[in-house]
Amino acid sequence: MATTTEPGKTGAIHNIGYRRYDGPRLGRRDIFLALYGQTLKGTFGIGRGLGAKIFPWLLFGSTVLPAFILVAVQTQIPPGPEGPQLLVEFGAYTVMVQAVPSLFLASQAPQAVSRDLRFHTLPLYFSRPLSYVDYVRARVAGIATGLGILVAAPLLVMYIGALLLEFPIGDMTLKLLAALVSLVFLVAMFTMIGTLIASVTPRRGLGVAAIIAVLSGSYMAATFLQALLGSFVSEPASAWGGLLSPITIYDGIQAFLFGWSPVDAAPSTPAVAPGAAAGLTLLAAAVAITALCYRLLLLRYRKVSRS
Amino acid sequence: MSTISIQGLTKRYPRVTALEGLSVEVPEGVCGLVGANGAGKSTLIKILLGLTPATSGTATVLGDDIHTAATAIRRNIGYMPEHDCLPPDASAAEFVMHLARMSGLPVDAARQRTADTLRHVGMYEERYRPMGGYSTGMKQRVKLAQALVHDPRMVFLDEPTNGLDPTGRDEMLDLIRKVHTRFGISVLVTSHLLGELERTSDHVVVIDGGRLLRSESTGNLTSQTHTLVLEVLDPAGGTDATETARKALAERDLSPRASGDLLYVPVTGPDTFDLIRDTVSAQGLGLVRLQRDRHRIAEIFGEPAAREGSAGDGDDH
Image (cartoon, rainbow over all chains, first blue to last red; front, side):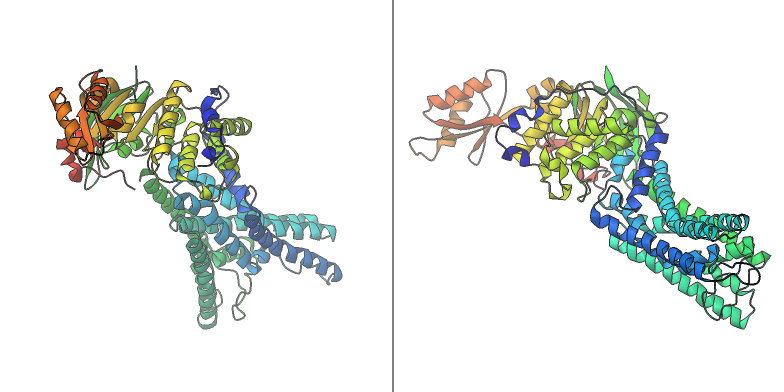
């Protein structure tokens, strides 16, 4: 034991007078906020070692940098006859870089959740005022905020760039708001799916792999099905194929709510906004996926908190 | 005054009964909770913390009911779990600080209390190193520190001496004693070894198979169960020193029992120590060792040990 290797110290170890704590004790809300803050900072490696910072900031750079480049290219393009046109619509950007939020989630959700499970730290949380429900909410909210910052930041860059290039401010602001509202669905689905997977894979590497597999696998399946439906059934029918993946659900919702063309993910997929039935179904699917994963997360932690 | 009051507490899992109609009052001070593995100790602690619901019965901890005021209980309690619970990549300082915040201390207070508490448990420079490199003794100290960091009114320590070598064990027991005498915090400490709790506790509660076996002040309990171990040596090089000593002790109305080179002598009164010393020395033998026996709970309560296999196993997860 290190304390005994220094002669003379062992005898004096416990002789410093103990002081009781009479200061304020914060309530559950503040404890929740503390855990939320720690989770959020953790997703960007703040408060962790240098190694933990590299990957999230690399991803952050790789999603923001293209936005800067787009703005730079935009300056070189003369306005068309119908006025200035955005090279890439705000709403389309996230789908183009969809691998980045997927990787971010896959690396950070296990970091936030799996470690506590793997090293059996959870009893230390649950023996404190915070309930397991608070714990789940704080962790989920922290991951969601981190992910939200990651996907919203490039849109803000593009928005500010557009304003500097004297695009109409009202139009741009509406587009940005629409894109951000749509992103809420994506972030909610992503966070819940990723956290749920991480919560059942105490081994971090496994969690990372599982999240990537689920997100990218489902995206591939969805775009494939969309292409099939678009080619062999009808163009509007292709929207139903989007139900398979959170990314295509988000894309479809965005097209449905705000009348934008879905991103041309597969060359053969026609860009047609989903009809009312498909659009509403996509919306319901987003809500259902989020709610179901949240419910399962709570069940999972209820079990853990009692064992 | 009781810190914990338990009435008819029962906990049934689908296949086992972990607690069966347990009723007991835990007084202030250091209380040992003794039972074989699977006797229901950890289950009891989890119920008292409000982490797992009791099947029936009720309990209050520091006046708060487990059914209605679990959050208040958890605010007043520090808990040191039995198993390993420290992330190896975090340092003790940042980990304990984080848990201080999770107990509701503001940032500055959390930092101050973390520094103080780690010092009280004997963690100095090593507190800034990742915990993965700590010895078992250091890990146990950090676990104790996180239970104390928010200055609780009472701590629940689940098998705090597990995995420690004899020196580490003694240091931990001294530390636990100090938690009450110096810090003024009541302690509920579990162990499957009665011997070590005799030294630390003011009161001992013995449970087996989820039932209360004994609840007595340590003084009462040890006077009934106290046994000394002694080892003798013939300076002349004789080989039957143990047998000679056994006969001599038996003649002095003690009831020694030989086991290998060791003699076990039940303590009958305060003069037993002197009697043993004088008797052995009168035989011209050297007294190499004279110490209290560390009982296994099963040795003292022979009958319950037979039930060990059927007892609830809520502990070992």
